[in-house]
Structures are given as C-alpha cells and as structure tokens.
Image 1 (cartoon, rainbow, N blue to C red):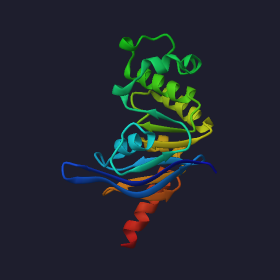
Image 2: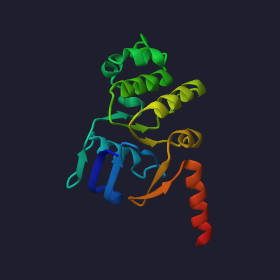
Image 3: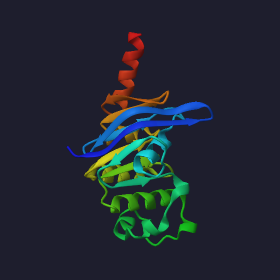
Length: 196
C-alpha cells in the first residue's frame, strides 16, 4: 500500500465559478479510480494538477512516484512516444509518421508512451477517444496488467466497468467517493436519489 499522491487545498476558480475546491485527497498504488462529472466540472484540470502539469497557488501536491499522463489528442509528444518502440509495435503504430497518424493512432502512441515509462501511476484523460473496439480491448488488457495506480477520466461506461474499482464523482468542486465500478456507482446514485 504505497502512497503515490497526497494533495491538499486544491482550489481553482474560473470565470467567477469554483471549479475545484478539494480539501484533501490521496492516491495509493492499488487504486483504480474512474473520475466522472459533468463537462466543465474540472476533471482534466484535476488530472493535470495531480500529475504536475498544472500548478495552482496554495495547493500542496506531493508525488511519491512517477506519473505518466495520457492527455487528449492535442498533447501528443511524438519524441516520447517514439522512445517506446516495443510498446508502439504492440499497439500497432510503430513507424507511423505523426503528420499521417489518425486520431486512433495518436491515441495508441500516447498510451504506448505512458505504458513504457514504467511509472507508479497512469492518469488518463479520455483514453478510448478515437479507438476502435480492438484498440479499446487492447487498452483494457494493458491497463489491467499495469502494476500501479490508475486515475481515468472517461465517458465510456463499459470501459470504466472493466478497469476501475472506485469512482470519484467531481461535482460542485468537490469529490464524492463510490466503491465499485461505474455500474455500481450508478446503482449507488439511484439508491441515494430514492432515499431523498
């Protein structure tokens, strides 16, 4: 049970609205977390803050291991991806020039780069975007085999059901935690709704 990330006082405001207002959170090596919430809730910002790609004032974010970030398509670092030759081959994108890559090939290159870093955690922002069913199956297999923490933003319910065992719901700037996969989360939300 190795601590990977410990964060305190994450506060982010945009256009006069509190996007993130998180007092404290921790991510451990065994965590497989799906991060869900409405569009604009701050999911991508939170991933970037926790991975170190976005710094905000007064937040205390401590990382106790390396974190590989699979960002959205406009953030492909081809040099890093090309350094992951074996993984690129396994994901069927070895030797493809960036300017000719399809969206699916770019996504596969980003996944190959992240997996080849041997990081303590992988944080992924919509990793199934532009992937066909074979690509998604391959990604699921790779993430299940990954020996580290996962924090995944995805709107793909079936994908989350296969790779996570905890859901963080980001709403009104805060995080609510639900144990289980995405289907379990929906059942728990329905039970909460009925109890009101």
